[in-house]
Image 1 (cartoon, helix red, strand yellow):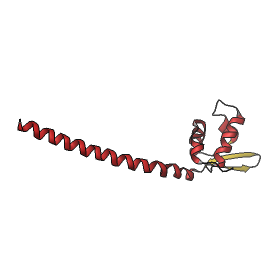
Image 2 (image 1 turned 60 degrees about the vertical axis):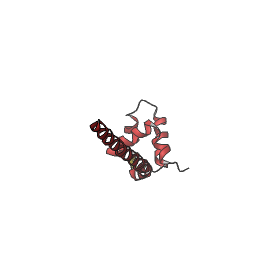
Image 3 (image 1 turned 90 degrees about the horizontal axis):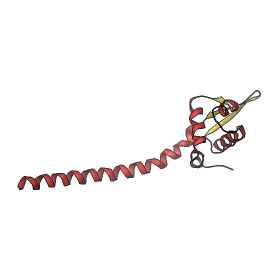
Image 4 (image 1 turned 90 degrees about the vertical axis):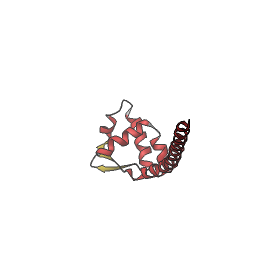
Length: 112
């Protein structure tokens, strides 16, 4: 089953795993050592991250190593960007409105 990247980053443990592996490749045991949850629970999180393409696992001898592949996070940035643009436009319009109101208020008070 191919999972969605939004589902993967919704969980704080998975976000922490991504952050940990974004800086270096680690074997599965080393990843698990960073968490106070069971190794099977860490393995489940790693499986989900792998299914959505955020992690790549490679076998080296008897060890399995994980590395982050963060290209899939572009979906998240693209999605968030549309809302950043929307709110930037709204806040710019509010700024313009408030500046115009202040000019109007200053003009009225000078006439008094």
